[in-house]
Length: 98
Image (cartoon, rainbow, N blue to C red; front, side):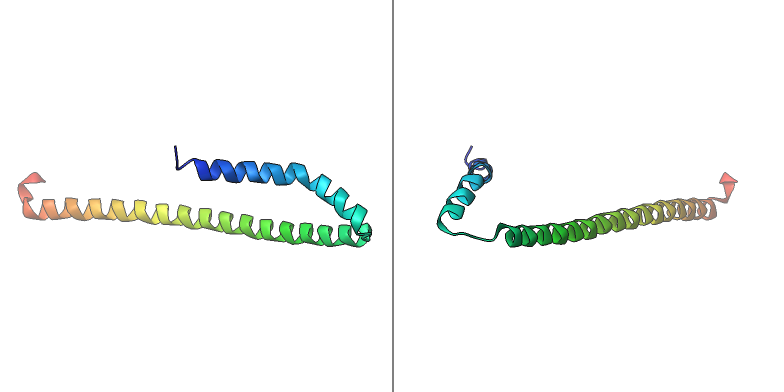
């Protein structure tokens, strides 16, 4: 029960931050007359950076899947070769099996 407490608290904290952020922005606007257009441009630039990072992560996942497929193919071929070697060894040790 204790191991689930920290993740649950983090999730609740994130929900509280997400639901409370409009109110915090409203308070900020009342006390500080900020230029919302420039702040919006900054937010959009972070969105573009996030898209680039996500695309990079997607390429990384795709390349790891390709590498895993190659490794599986190599392991399959290696297993087949080991089986052939073992059969040849048995055949050489027992010529009567021909």
